[in-house]
Amino acid sequence: MVGDYPELEAALKRVGADQSVGLYISIIDLQAERADIEDHKPRTDNDPYGPILGALNAFLRSLRRSTPSPGKIAKKLSSLPEPVFPFIRLELARRLDQEIDLENEDWSKPELRDALEVSVSHVRLWFRKHPGPAEAVGLAGFSRSVALLYRQIAGKPPGLGNQLGRKGYMTPFEELWLASLRLLSTDATLDQAREIYRKSPLPTKT
Image (tube, rainbow, N blue to C red; front, side):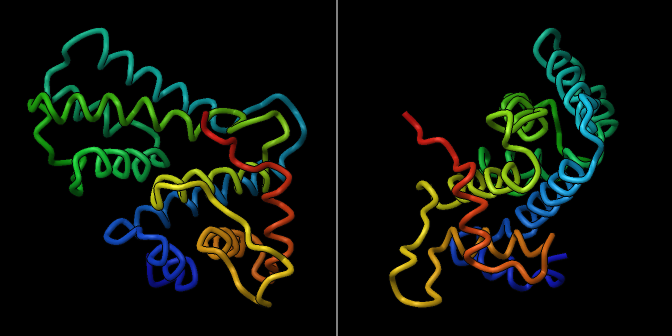
């Protein structure tokens, strides 16, 4: 998969994604698909990601309310909707500092079960109906998702360059956001990417 997105791969490596580049590309690609759905679906209250969020909530409840056997954990995990798996693998890798094989892990280990519970809880944030303010859907919501990934990878807030500065210069975040935006619009420009992000920036942590 990584070879299909050279511009995005290079941007992710620049911000320090290292061995998790493939996972981040999977997540950005899924968020791009979500943005495309949001921008082109009929304007109704229907949420195409509602069933995914419901499945995650049900799985999380089963982890918290009982002590399911390792076999039951594996079975329920494998039955989750396909789009959640890159997010779960990424969250587990970040917490355990190693790649996780969801199909073959020994879920009898307490540290793995605890990490899985926390990871599933965090993954739900990616499938909320609105990833931020009500207007943050479509491209605006996509920019927030990429900004959140940037913050997770780089450990600092995303920043925009000074348009009056060196011509053609991009901050590491801008490079990542522009490469991500070009999954939806191959001829997107830096100015367009900046304008979309300015409409719905990632909130500052307090």
